[in-house]
Length: 258
Image (tube, rainbow, N blue to C red; front, side):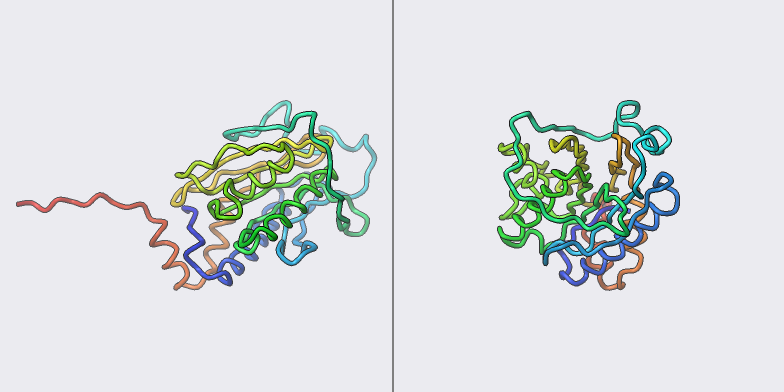
């Protein structure tokens, strides 16, 4: 299924889709994608503009239990198939205060999956709040998968990934391709200096799988496309009609015979 331009519908419609997508992502991860001992929960993030996120946890365990037996793919053996990888230099220093990260029943939080909404990008304050929370997670060695279906706007000219990466690197990142405004970024929190694994998608094209990192530089690929399709299926017909008209590729006009 092609990814849609969600600017065409009301905020409430996207919020409904966002909730359903989080649910289907959680189901896919808990039904066999995550290694034994890991689990995913939908959680309400602190703050007014983040909303529901998907949190991946692992029960408290000994270091010896973490390794090849932890499952998933090893970064050193099978690097994620993404378009671009960027890292932060030695000059980065944590300048912001950390926030408390919620643990469930004493279990360790290892990753977050965040789907950006309109409310995260509607003014400078909400962009800054989102970036603060992303930085706080990464500097506490919590990995992050960011899905931004909304093109760069007035308050995030390089997209939400650009706003996050500028906080770490201090420099303006490369611009998101105009023809591929959907940005996907998986951050591997490595000793408080993350690496970002980047992909981009165009409206009308399918979403690629993206890695979400766990512990010990291992990751699993998240099925964004199939879960997106399941969430979209539950939308009202009128919303689907608005979105699908714009998502369908234009067919060349046929010349009438003279």
